[in-house]
Length: 313
View 1 (cartoon, rainbow, N blue to C red):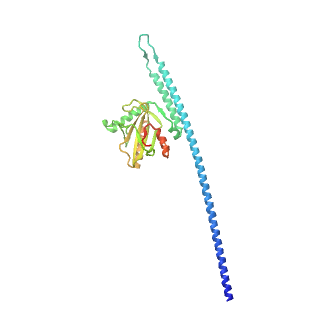
View 2 (cartoon, rainbow, N blue to C red):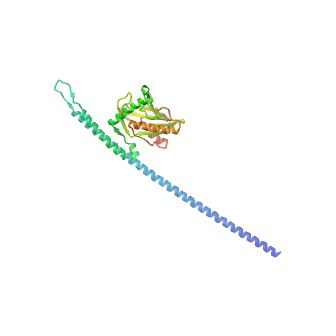
View 3 (cartoon, helix red, strand yellow):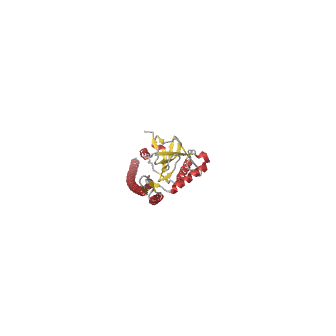
């Protein structure tokens, strides 16, 4: 009995020892797991901090680049205005030099100014070519802020050719109010429309802006410089596309729409491409402009567009 009791106590002691060892191993495993979790959390926080730092540095570089682009565009615009003022002054001096006074008792007469006009046109053409060469070396952000006035005969001829093409494509008398036609799509003037309205800034999906101005002769308006836009809306589950011609001297906007508004994304992209081609054959070079990802940024971008009106608060 004593031996049996001793064996029993020895077995219990061995069991207690084994349980203690198992508890020690379990505790060590838990401590190791906690240590690994803490190290993983520390690595995660360090990675997030590095990502935030990099994002802040990228944003700072982006803002610096945008500020430099705005400064360069402003300097370019100032140089352009100075050159235009000098050209106007020179043209005025040339025109004044051609004026002669007749003998007393007779009316004032003016000599033919063909040579003066030709010289002024040649100067404007040279300035346009230099401006285009300078524009080709600019980045898209810099070019978006630059407006190059084209006062060339080529633009006028191109406009007349496009009007003739519209008459041929539209079938004679039915083309009144149509913009120059393009293969596969045509755009029709919306009579009486004076502005495009939006209730929320996010309704405006995309906006393309011309990088140049072209001399055109819109119907019922005198010949003048025009700028061009492509504006699309996404509201109430529908997509709307407009081509806009802004008349500088008349301070009016003409709005054109496709034969039918796009029904899906494929048609939308096709009609945007058609609108870009339409403006290209008319003499405009357009590029998309960033509007901002938030309603506040988009509201500021849209507020400067002369053909848009906000109806919401």
